[in-house]
Amino acid sequence: MPHKISILVRADVDSAAVTILVTGCLTGATREVLASQIERACLLDSASPLVVDARDAQHDDPTTAA
Image (cartoon, rainbow, N blue to C red; front, top):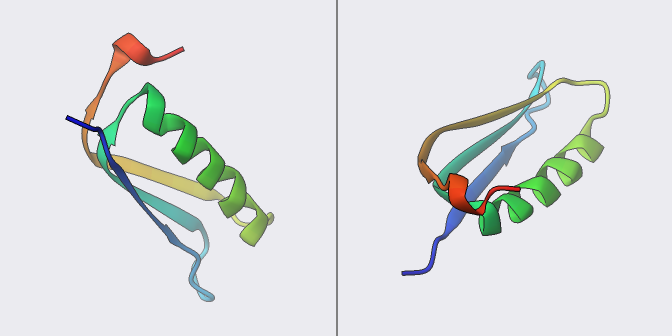
């Protein structure tokens, strides 16, 4: 079964932070996708803090983590 990840980046004009909401399977393979999206989100507003919310991720696979 392929592991999929869903990432929503919120950068509201009136918000104090840029937020990344993560759902799906957080594994070694999908964390590379998440890392690239974090880098891109930092470019949206470098002055605002970045919040990564992965509470709704289905699982974290430590066997593939580096």
